[in-house]
Length: 391
Image (cartoon, rainbow, N blue to C red; front, side, top):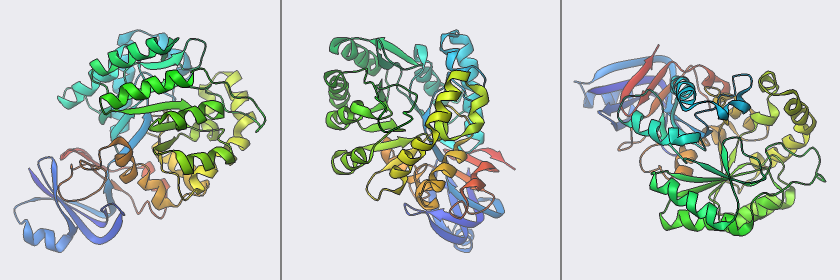
């Protein structure tokens, strides 16, 4: 099937440059052409027209920090890791559909039990399950005495090595470790524990590099963040309590990315779904965390992406926190499109509207580079050249 998809505005290429009265031509799974609507109609007279008058076309979104067997929109979700595999799968399939319908065409899943992420990735590829294309990590690895609701306890280098290899045997894309607690610090003086040794972190990095796959570390700050930079972790997740000195360390020495999930701390609308003790911690730490996170958004050197940590279909809210924290709307949108694809190693396949790339395309009600909240309502979703939503 060949389509000409037209809109008042098309955000094209790596720089999301606006093309007025633009069009994207798609054949099968690929983009053939991005440019003016008039030229597209002349060059491809046999294509089926899909018109989005008054709307804006942009690349499909990347949800850069997700979990399939967890749904932050549900009360008690932090305790749901002990549910059965069947219950996890049912929950995952709902979240996957919701994410896709919200414009997410690629999701980076950072830990689930029983390898349901690996199985569902294959099922989506085979067209048996509805959802974004997935990047998966299998079993997340935490310290025996440490944090990680979706992680499995480990002690010692060889236990981490064994699980890393089992994950890679199962075909994961990422190795995930849990380095610090989840609750952010309330003040700069508060001590942040580190539950994994430098040698354990370095072992996971070495195992990943041997097969050329990515590593990700749950890390809010403290000594663990410095270990992650030194060990060469590809993506550090959360950083709610990153200090000015650590910002400088990341700017100067970290070769990878920071993945931001600001809403966990900053969004009061998540509170009804959390235990009372967690609500108190988040409220107490909120303003200090805001200061810490805004340093990342305002840095000219740090490369960052954005995820929700299982707040399915609500990625647009995270872009709002980024912009409120000092990011430009352009950089915020890039963090879930162009730059997210680079972080995931998929920039040669998807992430922007460009001829030769995968036809992952969505429409918004207006230009999100002027107002990121326009991504709250997505009337059109195409993934790999197939239309899943067209309102």
